[in-house]
Image 1 (cartoon, rainbow, N blue to C red):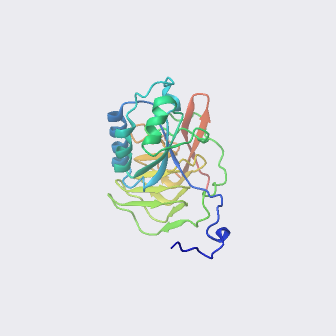
Image 2 (spheres, rainbow, N blue to C red; image 1 turned 180 degrees about the horizontal axis):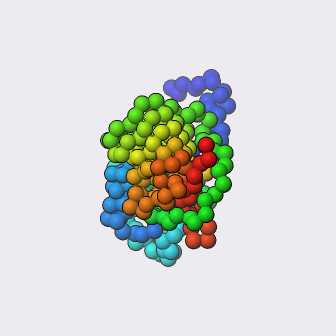
Image 3 (spheres, helix red, strand yellow; image 1 turned 60 degrees about the vertical axis):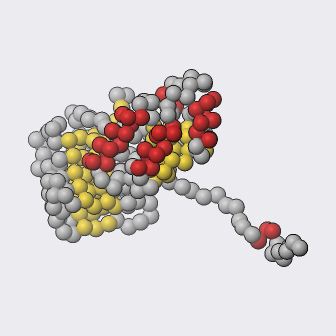
Length: 257
């Protein structure tokens, strides 16, 4: 005998729109081994950078033919999961590749808008003319800033997820500070500083004494091998991302305190 629920069907659930923050992996090669090596290098440089982030695999830049399924998604998906990325959808796939993606549980997200293709490894050059100092940009999320009031030693890492990071003491060589928003260091920066870690191109890095091993905004970075100019090295300075016809580059300019 069937049991009929007296609960009205309209009270079983609600369907509402929802927002989900996604990471876009914009592929520029079908070489799974090369992708694996690049991701591992990224995690070696920034341990814990990915945290089970949902990801869209964007193959739009591969110039694949409609009947081309040359990229091995069955090998790519477990690789991404090993690196703490959770593939949910694919963008730009057609024909057999799209069918392969659907068979592996990916959603067709061809209509998704990707804000910016983030370069994981791009050494940039210094702009000859610094920008005027501007007001720091607010973090993308409504969270208040994370505040660290102790010196950071070599090997230590701090990550302010979805917010700004404020450090009131020295960031020593070998230490690393990461934020999805801006980074403010009211002391010397001698380690690594990674702002806009999840693609916020408006993020900035501020330091009272700019002596970094590495600075990065939205995936565009510069290492100590490319020395900073004398007018900013060891001085109060800010780092911002500047876009131009030749692509994105980091701009390091003095702060007048």
